Length: 206
Image 1 (cartoon, rainbow, N blue to C red):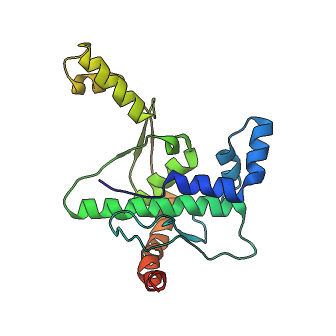
Image 2: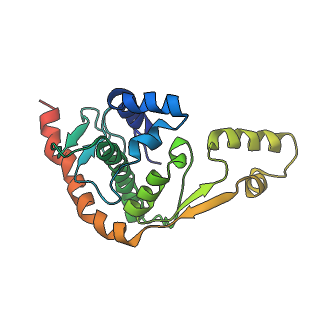
C-alpha cells in the first residue's frame, strides 16, 4: 500500500489559491475549473519541479518535516505549466512507490484509476507515461461507493461472493496506454526529481 498525504488536495489548493480566475470563469461558463487550469499545459514534460510534500511526505519516506517546493520558475512560467508540474510531482511520487514494489518482487503490469483524478484525461495519460504502465479506467470511478453497493448486494444474497459481484459490477471503460514519445522524455526528469528530497531535507530540518 502506498500513501500520499497531498494528492488531490494539493491540486485543489492550487486551484483555490492561485487560479481564482478559473473558478470565476468556470462558474460563468459551466465548465470545470480543473480543465480550464490545464487547458494550455505543455504536451510534454514541464521544465519545473514540484515536491508535493505540503503535509509532509507519504511513503516511502514518511518524513513529517518535508515541505512543498516549486523549483525552476522563470518569467516564462505559466499558470497551466505550474498546474501540470503539480500533477507531475504527484505522479513521480507514485512512480517511486511502484518502483519499490517491483523491486520487492511484486509484478505490476497495469494500474487502475479511481476517484476524482480518474476524470482528468491529462492526469491519466501522465500516470501512464511516467509510470510506463497501462492505466485501466472503470466505468464507475467512485470506487468507495461502488464497493459499498457491491458488499450490500452480496449481503442481501444477490451474489454468491464478493468476487462474483465484482466480476459483474466492475466494468473497464477504457485503457490508457503510455505514449512512447513522452515515456522517452520523462526518465531524466524522474532522476532529477528523486534528488529533490535528499538535497532539500537538511534545510527543512533547520
